[in-house]
Image 1 (cartoon, rainbow, N blue to C red):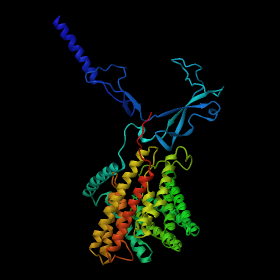
Image 2 (image 1 turned 135 degrees about the vertical axis):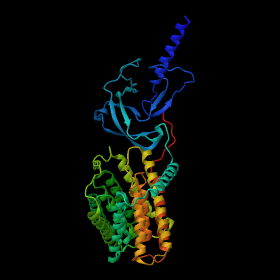
Image 3 (image 1 turned 90 degrees about the horizontal axis):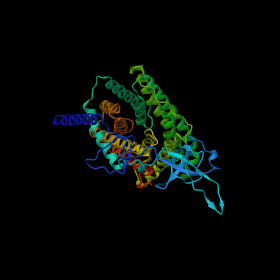
Image 4 (image 1 turned 90 degrees about the vertical axis):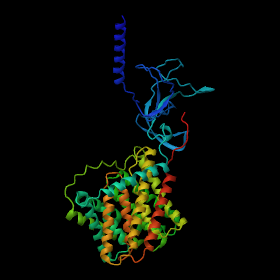
Length: 514
């Protein structure tokens, strides 16, 4: 008898252990745990709910509309709603259900919803439930708050510095990555020499164009360079045509900056030729901003910027054609969504483009208020505002992307600028040593730009600022003071950009969702 009981107990124990080994506790969806009353020692049974979870990705709104209104509704159409927990902000939603009937009486366990009729002396039209699903719900509905801007930027800076240290320890001159960096340095060196020989106004723009246009393969460099030249030429022409009507009108000039920048950022998001749209907007903004310092400079700025960009881009294309691989093994780019449905499926991109445009419009005002060295650096600030990552419907994720991008931008600016100033302290008076120092700095920037650790933009921004600090005129700089002023102007402008981005990007609001 005792042995039989012991055997049954062992069998029950083995069964329980087997069931435990096959048990998995998983949440069917992400959300917030609610109505939790479990205690240590409680027993869970199959098909008996113990924990309630509010789904964070399927927030629905059920609204009762008059029968005369719903005739124009269709399942799948877009709707705009305003939430009490997130006032003054329209949210996009999709119509996911339209009731075809309602119950006449409030009976329990009904198959049809009951909507109490509205009576005011006379019976008014009946209302039918319409179900809407939020496409971009506010962050406060997600059940968990994401990092704030300061924490996100601090974490991004820590990760970027750690990754940058590892990248510098892995420098290899002989591999494919090292060969690409050498081609980038050669293209920048060639662009600087040609720009100095032709005595262009700003040779650093030619060097920057060579740096960003030199891609891994010859075909990709050609595509990038063609888009850069075409976008710059069209933007310069547009800015030149608009400048006579905007010189004496600050309000109209600000509005033109807003429109041009918004279109450029939106084109970057939705067009297959997005890089040309971005460069066109940047160049148009540069021409218009130049008129704030000198109303007669629009023509010279438009011609000089186009010439400088063309010199640098052609240098990159030439070096890539001679030295870069011909085969392009890069995965095909995702298909651009195009310019359709900007107020529907692509509303997030439209919103972000308008925020960027407003930020660009406010930069000159902040620049004048803080009395930064000159408006010549405003073009870099404008480019920094507009070079934004891809935008999604998730405002919180967008905010984290922008914070990380801004952190990388400022970090690269500081590293590149300080490295350039450190080189200038050596007082290079001979052309060849100065050019060699420039090429070495560009090589390191290209190495970081090609990183697989998500810090490529640190290398891009660092190399751009290093070039602008090192290349100041018609040859090796004779003083460190212009480099310090330029670094201060760029850094101050980037800080303005980040402040404007924080103020214009929607933030999480403390709210309760009923």
